[in-house]
View 1 (cartoon, helix red, strand yellow):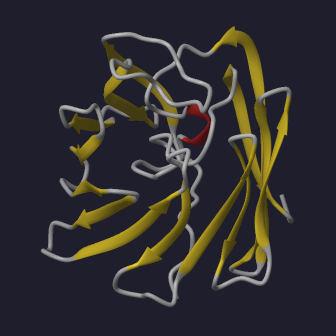
View 2 (cartoon, helix red, strand yellow):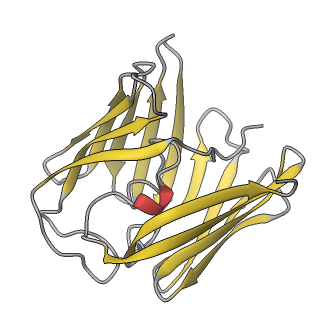
Length: 213
């Protein structure tokens, strides 16, 4: 049974931007958003991981590649459905089917290869509140304060519970098409803004601990 992909990441180093615009009431960017073309992750060594993003003529993410394992992720769109396909260097692939709500946020994810793996998402005023997964009797809880995501509580997975807290600067977040709060392992739907409004301020620090830390 597949488990949700949450991992601690290396330091977030560089983001390259192009274009500019404002954000609408649902946290989406307009028809000419600031698009992130590249993200660089570093562990302090000489071999950073570089992710490159490609978009269609509607500014929707369609392809993500990286220089680490040369795998790629493709996104396709049909009505209220988004399909994510991870293509591996050995020729294998994984596919996830996502249904969007009226605001364009994901309300369910089904794994094509493992249809019994279902994830359900709920929102309040456009902000992600909970995620329920078919492999857990518990749920992921997302806590917000004054428009900022301040903590994430995960259910017990692999015999331990992980909790993440986020503190913020007082710098207002410029509307871009990625969600910095969710930079953990790229790509993820949260990273590309498919899961609700983004926080109002830029994050300063996040700490992720398990029950024994």
